[in-house]
Length: 90
Image (tube, rainbow, N blue to C red; front, side, top):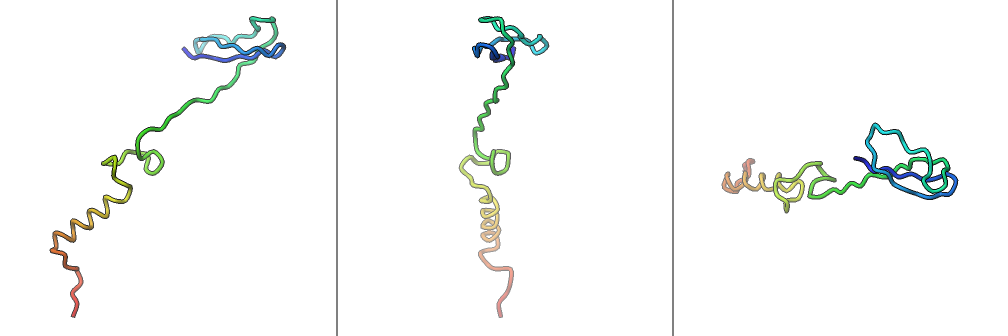
């Protein structure tokens, strides 16, 4: 069940109520009997792990930097061809 926070307009007291989503909101202050309003609270979000800010998914290796996979692929291509360039010089 969600926890809702209310504040009294008359006396300023703040209080919380655990209610079902379909329940009617509280309208009367338990301290003075005045009118209350429900307060909007921010939602806490914690991003953990790598990749949330760059690619929105995890890298294959937690230590790999974005773009390093392409560099290693280029290096493996070069080693397969024996280090020779694809262009021939005269």
